[in-house]
Amino acid sequence: MSNNIKIFQIYYKPELLEHCDTAFEPLDNTANTRPELREWHVWDQYHEQRMASGLDLWGYVSWKFQEKTGLAGQTVLDWIAANPGHDVYLINPCIVNEAVFANCWEQGDYYHPNISDIGNRFLQKLGYTDVDVRGILLDRNRTVYTNYVVGTPEFWDKFMIFSRRLFTEADQDGEFENLVFGQGLSNYAHDPTLPNFTFLIERLLPTFIELENIRCLAYCHDKTSVLPKYQQVFAAVQALSDLKVEINRHQSDELYDVWNYFRQDFLNRNPGVLNLE
Image 1: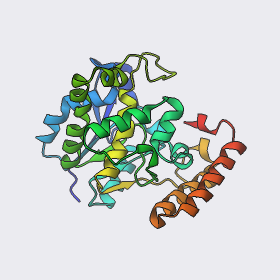
Image 2: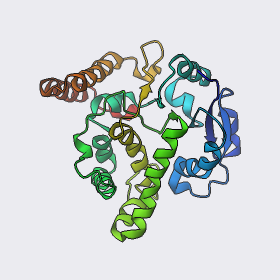
Image 3: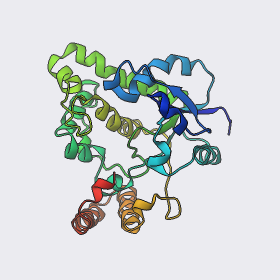
Image 4: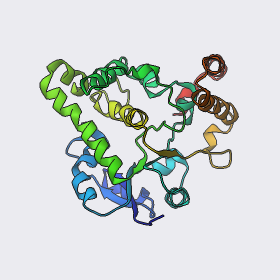
């Protein structure tokens, strides 16, 4: 596989530069002109430049990448190099959320009420008329939180065209514009001013990969690589995650019922486990 890969690590305060991994390319976002759009604005700003750069793969991560994933940058680059041929590589730091929710929309509705309705409305505007995001079972092979993705130029170009439609559709529909960009409507505890936009992007990304059947590979932790905070629950989390993969492999309602029972049991026996993420 080509070594023509770059992962850009975004930092938004000068003092955060020292936290960036030397295997990644530091990306200065201290100007942070559109903070309400979070990393998507960086993707958008640099998209044409990246498309003209000749890179085979690129991606973006936050300055907290190692803290959230437990992975060194070189480990990620080596993993990609050892597994060529995919259009997208996913590094999901939220393994509990993947295991206990059917998809990122179910999880999203838990924290950002009715975000799945906004997602459905957007997809219908784009012609995905037979899709209900709540009914898609996204297993670990299609799940990523925090937008830790590395992809080909073809992937990024398609996704940026797709995601920019949020703006053009909002320009034509005032109610939709408010749902997507209305200040504070995300109900995000850490920043009460944030709109739904950034949380929509986080969920539209894996959904787009699923709907377009894009070839992707997800990084899978084992007990030796997972963060210490997961050690006590890792076996159960891994079993639930495995069950989701089998549900999709066999298209089995019976296995779904098994997974649904055990996820509820796991959550009941581990109150507060969602706070790990």
